[in-house]
Structures are given as C-alpha cells and as structure tokens.
Image (cartoon, rainbow, N blue to C red):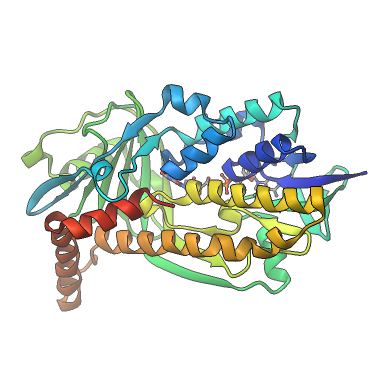
Length: 383
Ligand code: RFL
C-alpha cells in the first residue's frame, strides 16, 4: 500500500508540512526516530518571524502561540562604548517577533496533527530512502508517492540527495556558542547582544522564568568545562554588569555547544524525494532563522505536493527550489552579517585589531543611521 507522502522527522518542518497536507486532503504518515516525550521536550529555537506566525495562524496552528507567546519588538546592543536599544517594531516593515519555545510549538503541532486524524509513529528510525521507499530499522518498509525529508541536518534524506549528486554550498563561521538555558527570569526586556574582547555574549528572554544565554567559545569546547559559576562569571564580564547592572541568576537547566556553520543544498529535492528545514540546509543561529526557514519551506512544499498529488501537476515541485532559495539566501546573507557583527577575532595581532574595529564600525552604523536601522529591522524580522 502506498501513501501520498511519507514524512521523515517530526520537527517543526515535518509537523507543519503534515498538518498542511492533512488540511488539503492529502494522506501522509510521519515517521520519527525519537520518543514523543523527547521530541516534545527538546528546547531549541524560540523566535518566530511574522511570516511564520502568519503561516501558522492561516492554517489553524497558532492557538498556543497566540495564548502563551510573547511579542518582542526591541533588541539591545552593548559594547565598550555603551549600549543602545533598537525599537525594530517601529522600523523597517514594522514587524515584530513572537517568542514561543520550539518545544511548545512542536507539542501544539503534534496534538493538532493527531486531532486531524494524521498518522504519526514515534520510535521509528529511517535507515534508507530510495525511490519513494523508506526503510525503517527493524520494521516494515513504507512506500509513498513522495517522500518528504524533514529529518534535520544529520538525517538520511540529505545524504540520499547528496548521493544523487546534489551539491552543497558551505560556510564555517569558525566559532561556537555555549548555549545555556537557565531557570532565571530575563534580565533585559527582550534580546541583548554584547560585544566583548573575550567574545560575544547573548541574552534571549524566553518566558517569565526561563532565559537563554549564549557565550562564544572556541571550537571543540566541552560543555563540561563550563560550571554554573564560570557561566555566570563570564556572562557578567561580557555583559558588563559592573556598568549596566547585574543579571538575575538561576540554575542552569541545559548547556550545549553549537558550532556556527551554514550550508545550503543547491537543489532541495528531485524525483520523489523533497527536503524541508534543516535537512535542506543549516543556518548558523546568529539571527535565529532556522525554525523560520523550516516553516517557510514546509509551507511551499505543502502547496507543491498537494498540486502534484491532487492534480498530477508537478510544476510546483519543479519550482520549489526557485521559490525557496532566494528567500533562504537572504536569510543566510543577514545571518552572515550578524555573525560578523557579533564575533570579533580571538587574538591580539594587527589583523585582530582591524577585525574588532570593523565590528565597532558596523555597530556604530547601526546605532546612528536610520537607513541602516530600517534595513536591519526588515531583515531581522523578515523571511
Ligand atoms: P529538527 O527540529 O532537527 O527535526 C528533525 C526531526 O527528525 C528526526 N530524525 C529522524 N526521524 C526518523 N528517522 C531518522 N533517521 C531521523 N533522523 C532525524 C529527529 O529526531 C527530529 O525530531 O529539524 P527541522 O524540523 O528542520 O527544524 C529545524 C529547527 O529545529 C532548527 O532550525 C532550529 O531549532 C534552529 N534554531 C533556531 N531557529 C530559529 O528560527 N530561532 C531560534 O531562536 C533558534 N535557536 C536553534 C536555536 C538551534 C539550536 N540548536 C540546538 C542547534 C538554538 C539552538 C541552541
């Protein structure tokens, strides 16, 4: 028996796609390697762009984020020449972010998908995908007219496509972030970016009692090297608390090291296999675009697969790369610029001094130029 679409992976990409397909009357099944509790408990992103909120709202998937999400319209920059706040909700296109933890969004998407009568199998690890056939470890093969690879950056879908000859474009930003989730109320109104000669530090308000922090660290850092004490001391230094006031501390719930890398598949699908989300490309977290690109691609792919399955019309699929990639690349360009703004060189030679001076020139431009601020706002919130 063949289903319309076999979706591999129940992250934001797979779950948005599954919900949209069910809504359009396309039969699908989602296969997810991990257990439901693990998928619903994985804290990652939190920043939803206006476009993502629109897609979720238009498809009846936004009840939770409307009820519990918070709106962010400002961000703050701090450095050795003081701090300033950008009121980006009043700049550019006037768009804001909705802050809603990814695991809560995933929980909502799972519940809604099941409520719509969708099939979703947890604990099913896909080992291989070929020509519409999906092989599950220790289980039965599942065959789809199409397979949607939404299994993240280390998944099998991406490997299968690369094996077919799809090339990637890649960039390594050369730095890593210690990503910390603390059970502590936010210490700033929203997001704070601190530039410091010891490295970048970031503050992202999540909920009334949970805050995410980032600390730039060398590639290869073991999170175990970072005790709670060391984390709070380093955050205090880089966020210049002596000058701007203390951070509200609390127990560290999670710490992980994320390497800042980006890559984009030249063509996110072919034949019967189509990719969305991190499977189709990874974006460094410097501008919080990853989950938003996942939603965008799931939306585009849902339309294209629906046309293909209900009308036998594959022009949408043929156009998928051309529709998605320009927007994906705009996000990468901005993320890349953000990365250059946030990360100074680590050493102290002439080139490092040059690099740091450029960093401050970028910041100064953003502080003083209304034109630059509008451009920033448009890209910061846009997809
Ligand atoms: P996901 O979320 O990785 O989901 C993929 C799913 O596929 C499953 N899977 C398999 N299932 C079956 N068989 C296999 N062989 C499988 N292999 C994998 C996995 O178990 C998983 O459930 O990918 P998706 O859906 O493409 O979504 C992408 C986003 O999760 C990701 O881009 C963001 O989390 C990135 N990101 C952020 N994005 C934002 O837009 N805003 C943010 O503020 C933000 N912060 C972040 C982030 C990512 C982070 N980490 C940990 C990389 C902060 C962090 C710390």
